[in-house]
Length: 444
Ligand SMILES: Cc1cc2nc3c(=O)[nH]c(=O)nc-3n(C[C@H](O)[C@H](O)[C@H](O)COP(=O)(O)OP(=O)(O)OC[C@H]3O[C@@H](n4cnc5c(N)ncnc54)[C@H](O)[C@@H]3O)c2cc1C
Image 1 (cartoon, rainbow, N blue to C red):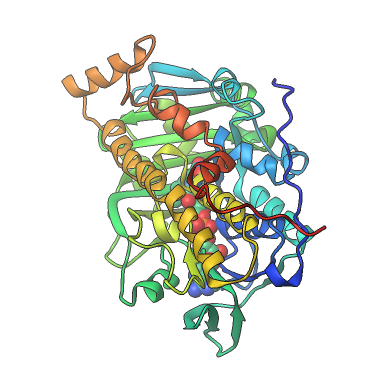
Image 2: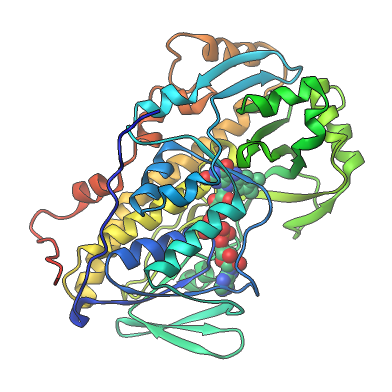
């Protein structure tokens, strides 16, 4: 394992003349990441969350090298190490269970010093982000559903469902895929686009799996496995160092119009995979209840920020993606890091300063997040091919050494992977920050 230490960002200490009051709407992974990054930039942050409790649903999440890098810049390595599992390989299997190709994750992360492939229980990652945000000074309020944002000059006011109002120099909409703030910004309804797929998400206790030698292998040797096949696929990996087993089934969407989450039928779910690798059936037989999520996407927004420079957007609210590149949260965390880095460079609270920061933020993020959403859609096509010439060509490309651009094991794709996994937010901001504008000299 690499001994390279990622440099932790130091908190800027500012005078009142350049310290913004920032309201972040949504305490999801992206919103909490933004809280951390903006606090490190020396500003004040209040987070408004609609739920009555701060938390994440019980399921797994894969964190790729680009995100593991920036989480470390936020000083979270030690806290996260307690909960992370480091998978050794990512395996692509046919739907019948034959291995097509594998990625050595240690070798892959080794190309980006100090980074890892990490798997987490979402609740743990979320709690670590919350702890760090609070440690840095975030104030987090639950039961605070924001329904409107009023703009006056270069200030914004978040209006909550219960009538409370809170004013700020900047409101950041991080309210997820079914974003209210996106619609406020656009001044019209704008629902996300269904992808045609839904996800069953399961968490299994590994105790039962250890009694079956075939299933015990999944635990003893932590790997990420993708079974890909006609119209659907299945992903699984170990969490909390072997305590839990996360499984996601991605299948054609059969949910009624308007629904986004529903209780699923376990028998129906098993039937969808009845002819697949028998190990999947064994795993599914251990599941007693399940929920299903409709998967939607958003390609982006023409303008991520309001002309007043008092209101901007980030995360799934702007660019929700199919989870087939395991990069949705990664993009939200990157948005957060870039926004923080841009706000770290402003020297005053003026509209011009905020506008500069928000313009550079959008410039850094727009094309990149669109690239990820589009690639997620391509992965859907590649993963779900029926047996035949196209599937054979897909598998042939995955077996080539080296593999060609556009191959289905995207994290190894020679064109995509350096861009996706080797992202460095500070370098991106450096590239896009106008040369004639001097950087902030923080007041110490
Ligand atoms: C099945 C599945 C698997 C996935 N796997 C991965 C993976 O392995 N790796 C990865 O990087 N990504 C993955 N993702 C994507 C990832 O979960 C999302 O991209 C990420 O959680 C988005 O973060 P966010 O903060 O933008 O939005 P969210 O996490 O949705 O947070 C939004 C927050 O805003 C709150 N909120 C909503 N409306 C309001 C309002 N009006 N006022 C106040 N608060 C409000 C919500 O309660 C919530 O807390 C997966 C997604 C799915 C569906």
